[in-house]
Amino acid sequence: MKKTQNSTIRPPIVVVLGHIDHGKSSLLCAIKDFKITEKESGGITQHIGAYQIEQQGKKITFIDTPGHEAFSAMRSRGAKVADIAVLVVDSSEGVKTQTKEAILDIRKAGIPIIIALNKIDKPAADPERVKKELSQQDILVESIGGKIPSVETSAKTGQGISELLELILLVAEMENLRIDPSKQAEGLVIESYLDKLRGPTATLLLTDGTLKKGALLATFSTFGKVKELENFQGNRIEEIFPADPAIIIGFEKVPKVGEKFKVFSDLENAKKYQKAAEKRTAEVLEISPGQKVLNLILKTDVVGTIEAIETVLKNLPQEKVILRILKAEAGDINESDLKLAKPGKALILGFRVKMNPIAKLLFEREKIKVMSFDVIYDLVEGVRKIMEKRIETEQVRIDVGKVKALIIFLTEKNRQIVGGKVIEGEVKKGTKIEVLRNEEKIGKGKLINLQKDKKDIDQINKGGECGILYEGNVKVEQGDVLKIYTEERKKGEL
Image 1 (spheres, rainbow, N blue to C red):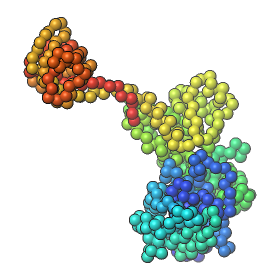
Image 2: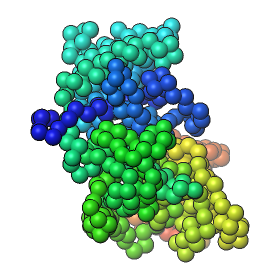
Image 3: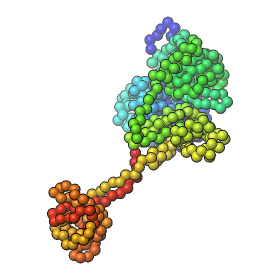
Image 4: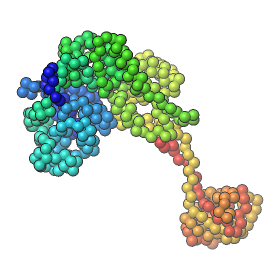
């Protein structure tokens, strides 16, 4: 960034990326000496958070992005707001699927990368092997002739933590990160949720200007006034500066994670911005007549999870059943959710939320379908099964063989004994028959019995001769071809 008259150096914003369980959160805990007290389902950090530490009197802001594949969009967004990416790779496991995804996110963002070869304390740690695997992804670290800095770290022992922070400050200095604090404040919503006592709550990351308590601000989805301003540790403050994360209270409703926010001089302009943005981003779902639709109401613990769930639900095949989300918001399942679900025949999906007492009474009385989950994968599989139940079972025909009619032994009413030769596939007892004459279908029937040398048999293969007891709606003649097939009911699939 070019130096301007009012510009000043700001702290770097660092995004921490990597494969699930490679130690991103534990590394951040070691960096900021911050203990995560509650372990999440599957040991996965599922909410984006921002934290700030000091090293050598200089601040560094860290964004902790989730590692689960469902959060690819959130990881990508995290990389775009950051100045530097730290790619955490388990020294004993090496490059994995989400490591490769993170590398793509970093490249798209066009930001410098530092490699943290983590869990170096493990007996199976082999950093040289990991460096070679990274080179196959065009990530060449300095120790093997490349330009990308790397450091061996251990969240458990603290090894390499100081070196990592010094590397971050060195890269930040080379990037010459500057801002103009006199500019109108703007930034990004990092996390948001509905606090039962305090109302809509959001974690913001300021990218420009100065944000003060009492400021009027708006995002694409909502607007409000900063009633309370807290730093990431929950301490009340009066203002924040670029690269500072902060918790604010005062939005009219919960903003969406990843939205940009801007500060306005008056409430009218803030509302205008929000309304105009809302109109631009509105999506219309067109549904053709007769198309099967599954309506959903999604309730989650925090807003950040909504996008993650919507992303993986969109990946479900929707040619046969369309998913339509009528409502998606953070907070417990309440009576308004159930009232909306009844006319829309919607399925209510709860993710790490409860149902309030009034809603429970309605739920029992109205028999509305509610499903609750703690893990995103289970939620998606639950929705998939409901969608498949909406698809009607299909009658599938399976061709098994062909018989050429050589002689007609007996004809009575709608039955005949036909002598023939299997010219393709095989013939089985109890199958169905399609009668072809001059390659045109003229009728159909059933194969009642099958004989060879006047003895009952279950099946006969290509080249064999047999007698068939045929029952059908047309008379078979010499030279006709009997197409043998079965029919099975196939369960609906997406």
